Image (tube, rainbow, N blue to C red; front, side, top):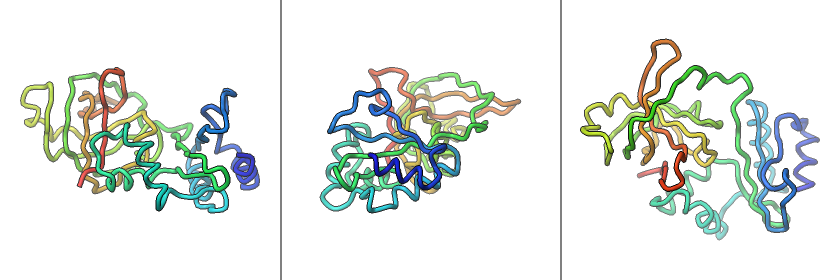
Length: 225
Protein backbone atom coordinates (compact mmCIF):
# COMPACT_ATOMS: atom_id res chain seq x y z
CA UNK A 1 0.00 0.00 0.00
CA UNK A 2 2.80 2.44 0.90
CA UNK A 3 4.53 1.79 -2.44
CA UNK A 4 1.33 2.53 -4.34
CA UNK A 5 0.77 5.79 -2.47
CA UNK A 6 4.40 6.74 -3.14
CA UNK A 7 3.87 6.09 -6.88
CA UNK A 8 0.73 8.27 -6.89
CA UNK A 9 2.55 11.13 -5.17
CA UNK A 10 5.61 10.87 -7.41
CA UNK A 11 3.35 10.86 -10.48
CA UNK A 12 1.75 14.11 -9.34
CA UNK A 13 -1.63 12.39 -9.13
CA UNK A 14 -2.40 12.85 -5.44
CA UNK A 15 -5.25 15.25 -6.28
CA UNK A 16 -6.96 12.86 -8.70
CA UNK A 17 -6.41 9.41 -7.13
CA UNK A 18 -7.63 8.67 -3.61
CA UNK A 19 -8.03 5.80 -1.16
CA UNK A 20 -11.46 4.65 0.02
CA UNK A 21 -12.98 1.57 1.67
CA UNK A 22 -11.72 0.06 4.91
CA UNK A 23 -8.43 1.99 4.83
CA UNK A 24 -10.31 5.30 5.10
CA UNK A 25 -12.35 4.35 8.17
CA UNK A 26 -9.51 2.50 9.90
CA UNK A 27 -10.96 -1.02 9.91
CA UNK A 28 -8.49 -2.59 7.49
CA UNK A 29 -6.54 -5.73 8.31
CA UNK A 30 -3.94 -7.97 6.66
CA UNK A 31 -6.61 -9.51 4.38
CA UNK A 32 -8.28 -6.26 3.33
CA UNK A 33 -8.73 -5.25 -0.29
CA UNK A 34 -7.34 -1.92 -1.45
CA UNK A 35 -10.04 0.36 -2.85
CA UNK A 36 -9.04 3.42 -4.87
CA UNK A 37 -11.00 6.10 -6.67
CA UNK A 38 -9.88 8.39 -9.48
CA UNK A 39 -11.36 11.68 -10.58
CA UNK A 40 -11.68 13.46 -13.89
CA UNK A 41 -9.91 12.51 -17.15
CA UNK A 42 -6.46 13.13 -15.64
CA UNK A 43 -7.24 10.70 -12.82
CA UNK A 44 -8.41 8.09 -15.33
CA UNK A 45 -5.16 8.41 -17.27
CA UNK A 46 -3.11 8.19 -14.07
CA UNK A 47 -5.01 5.06 -13.01
CA UNK A 48 -4.28 3.49 -16.40
CA UNK A 49 -0.57 4.11 -15.84
CA UNK A 50 -0.69 2.81 -12.25
CA UNK A 51 -2.41 -0.46 -13.14
CA UNK A 52 0.06 -0.99 -15.98
CA UNK A 53 2.97 -0.79 -13.52
CA UNK A 54 3.80 -4.49 -13.08
CA UNK A 55 6.25 -3.83 -10.24
CA UNK A 56 3.27 -2.69 -8.16
CA UNK A 57 0.18 -4.42 -9.55
CA UNK A 58 -0.14 -7.75 -11.34
CA UNK A 59 -3.15 -8.29 -13.61
CA UNK A 60 -5.41 -11.26 -13.04
CA UNK A 61 -4.09 -13.97 -15.34
CA UNK A 62 -3.37 -17.68 -15.31
CA UNK A 63 -4.46 -19.43 -12.13
CA UNK A 64 -5.46 -16.14 -10.48
CA UNK A 65 -8.35 -15.80 -12.97
CA UNK A 66 -10.28 -18.38 -10.96
CA UNK A 67 -9.87 -16.20 -7.90
CA UNK A 68 -11.35 -13.25 -9.80
CA UNK A 69 -14.23 -15.37 -11.06
CA UNK A 70 -15.10 -16.52 -7.53
CA UNK A 71 -14.93 -12.90 -6.34
CA UNK A 72 -17.28 -11.56 -9.01
CA UNK A 73 -19.59 -14.46 -9.93
CA UNK A 74 -22.06 -13.73 -7.12
CA UNK A 75 -22.60 -10.25 -8.55
CA UNK A 76 -22.88 -11.38 -12.16
CA UNK A 77 -25.02 -14.49 -11.75
CA UNK A 78 -25.59 -16.52 -14.90
CA UNK A 79 -22.58 -15.30 -16.82
CA UNK A 80 -20.14 -17.80 -18.31
CA UNK A 81 -16.55 -17.95 -17.09
CA UNK A 82 -15.12 -16.47 -20.30
CA UNK A 83 -17.75 -13.75 -20.64
CA UNK A 84 -17.42 -12.65 -17.02
CA UNK A 85 -13.63 -12.43 -17.25
CA UNK A 86 -13.83 -10.46 -20.51
CA UNK A 87 -16.19 -8.05 -18.78
CA UNK A 88 -13.99 -7.78 -15.69
CA UNK A 89 -10.76 -7.37 -17.67
CA UNK A 90 -11.89 -3.90 -18.72
CA UNK A 91 -11.79 -2.55 -15.17
CA UNK A 92 -8.95 -1.20 -13.08
CA UNK A 93 -8.22 -4.18 -10.82
CA UNK A 94 -5.46 -6.63 -10.06
CA UNK A 95 -3.27 -8.04 -7.29
CA UNK A 96 -0.60 -6.14 -5.41
CA UNK A 97 2.83 -7.41 -6.39
CA UNK A 98 3.92 -8.00 -2.82
CA UNK A 99 1.06 -9.29 -0.65
CA UNK A 100 -1.21 -10.38 -3.52
CA UNK A 101 -4.10 -8.30 -2.15
CA UNK A 102 -6.96 -7.42 -4.47
CA UNK A 103 -6.78 -3.80 -5.59
CA UNK A 104 -9.28 -1.90 -7.68
CA UNK A 105 -10.00 1.68 -8.70
CA UNK A 106 -13.40 3.17 -9.49
CA UNK A 107 -13.44 6.17 -11.85
CA UNK A 108 -15.85 8.90 -10.77
CA UNK A 109 -17.37 11.57 -12.98
CA UNK A 110 -15.76 14.97 -13.31
CA UNK A 111 -16.82 17.71 -10.89
CA UNK A 112 -18.67 19.56 -13.64
CA UNK A 113 -20.25 16.49 -15.23
CA UNK A 114 -23.83 17.36 -16.18
CA UNK A 115 -24.79 13.98 -17.68
CA UNK A 116 -27.66 13.44 -15.25
CA UNK A 117 -28.41 17.06 -14.42
CA UNK A 118 -32.10 17.91 -14.78
CA UNK A 119 -33.11 14.33 -15.57
CA UNK A 120 -36.19 13.01 -13.77
CA UNK A 121 -36.43 9.22 -13.47
CA UNK A 122 -39.82 7.60 -12.85
CA UNK A 123 -40.13 3.84 -12.32
CA UNK A 124 -42.49 2.02 -14.68
CA UNK A 125 -41.83 -1.63 -13.82
CA UNK A 126 -39.24 -4.38 -14.13
CA UNK A 127 -37.77 -5.75 -17.34
CA UNK A 128 -35.20 -8.24 -18.64
CA UNK A 129 -33.75 -7.87 -22.13
CA UNK A 130 -30.91 -8.64 -24.47
CA UNK A 131 -29.53 -5.30 -25.63
CA UNK A 132 -26.73 -4.06 -27.86
CA UNK A 133 -24.45 -1.31 -26.54
CA UNK A 134 -24.39 1.60 -28.99
CA UNK A 135 -22.33 4.10 -26.97
CA UNK A 136 -20.01 3.54 -23.98
CA UNK A 137 -18.43 7.00 -23.80
CA UNK A 138 -20.42 7.92 -20.67
CA UNK A 139 -20.04 4.45 -19.16
CA UNK A 140 -16.39 4.77 -18.14
CA UNK A 141 -17.11 6.64 -14.89
CA UNK A 142 -19.70 6.29 -12.12
CA UNK A 143 -22.59 6.99 -12.55
CA UNK A 144 -22.38 5.04 -15.81
CA UNK A 145 -24.76 5.70 -18.68
CA UNK A 146 -24.63 3.46 -21.75
CA UNK A 147 -26.53 3.93 -24.99
CA UNK A 148 -28.38 0.74 -25.97
CA UNK A 149 -30.84 -0.75 -28.43
CA UNK A 150 -33.00 -3.66 -27.33
CA UNK A 151 -32.72 -6.85 -29.39
CA UNK A 152 -35.10 -9.05 -27.40
CA UNK A 153 -37.47 -8.58 -24.47
CA UNK A 154 -37.13 -11.67 -22.27
CA UNK A 155 -39.62 -10.75 -19.56
CA UNK A 156 -41.36 -7.75 -18.05
CA UNK A 157 -43.99 -6.73 -15.54
CA UNK A 158 -45.31 -4.39 -18.25
CA UNK A 159 -47.86 -5.76 -20.73
CA UNK A 160 -46.61 -5.99 -24.32
CA UNK A 161 -43.26 -4.43 -23.48
CA UNK A 162 -41.86 -5.49 -26.86
CA UNK A 163 -44.12 -2.98 -28.62
CA UNK A 164 -42.19 -0.01 -27.20
CA UNK A 165 -38.79 -1.65 -26.61
CA UNK A 166 -37.37 0.49 -29.43
CA UNK A 167 -37.84 3.49 -27.13
CA UNK A 168 -35.44 2.05 -24.50
CA UNK A 169 -32.19 3.83 -25.28
CA UNK A 170 -30.18 3.85 -22.03
CA UNK A 171 -28.71 1.57 -19.41
CA UNK A 172 -27.90 3.47 -16.22
CA UNK A 173 -25.96 2.33 -13.17
CA UNK A 174 -24.82 3.99 -9.98
CA UNK A 175 -22.90 0.81 -9.10
CA UNK A 176 -19.17 0.62 -9.68
CA UNK A 177 -19.61 -3.03 -10.67
CA UNK A 178 -20.80 -1.99 -14.12
CA UNK A 179 -18.60 1.06 -14.68
CA UNK A 180 -16.33 0.53 -17.67
CA UNK A 181 -17.54 -3.05 -18.11
CA UNK A 182 -19.09 -2.73 -21.56
CA UNK A 183 -18.08 -1.44 -24.97
CA UNK A 184 -19.90 -0.37 -28.11
CA UNK A 185 -21.11 -3.46 -29.99
CA UNK A 186 -21.40 -5.71 -26.91
CA UNK A 187 -24.52 -7.84 -26.49
CA UNK A 188 -25.60 -7.59 -22.85
CA UNK A 189 -28.22 -9.35 -20.75
CA UNK A 190 -29.94 -6.72 -18.60
CA UNK A 191 -32.34 -7.22 -15.71
CA UNK A 192 -33.41 -4.08 -13.90
CA UNK A 193 -35.95 -1.35 -13.43
CA UNK A 194 -37.66 0.09 -16.49
CA UNK A 195 -37.77 3.85 -16.00
CA UNK A 196 -39.14 6.80 -17.92
CA UNK A 197 -36.48 9.50 -18.21
CA UNK A 198 -37.57 13.07 -18.78
CA UNK A 199 -35.46 16.16 -19.30
CA UNK A 200 -33.65 18.36 -19.59
CA UNK A 201 -36.12 20.39 -21.61
CA UNK A 202 -38.67 18.33 -23.54
CA UNK A 203 -36.37 15.36 -24.12
CA UNK A 204 -37.70 12.01 -22.90
CA UNK A 205 -36.76 8.36 -23.32
CA UNK A 206 -36.87 5.03 -21.49
CA UNK A 207 -33.99 3.34 -19.72
CA UNK A 208 -33.07 0.34 -17.61
CA UNK A 209 -31.61 1.18 -14.21
CA UNK A 210 -29.40 -1.23 -12.27
CA UNK A 211 -29.49 0.59 -8.94
CA UNK A 212 -30.37 -1.89 -6.14
CA UNK A 213 -33.36 -0.07 -4.70
CA UNK A 214 -34.37 -3.31 -2.96
CA UNK A 215 -31.99 -5.84 -1.43
CA UNK A 216 -34.56 -8.54 -2.19
CA UNK A 217 -34.13 -8.16 -5.97
CA UNK A 218 -31.32 -8.83 -8.41
CA UNK A 219 -30.11 -6.18 -10.86
CA UNK A 220 -27.80 -7.66 -13.45
CA UNK A 221 -25.81 -6.66 -16.49
CA UNK A 222 -23.97 -9.62 -18.01
CA UNK A 223 -21.91 -9.73 -21.16
CA UNK A 224 -23.60 -12.21 -23.53
CA UNK A 225 -22.35 -14.07 -26.59
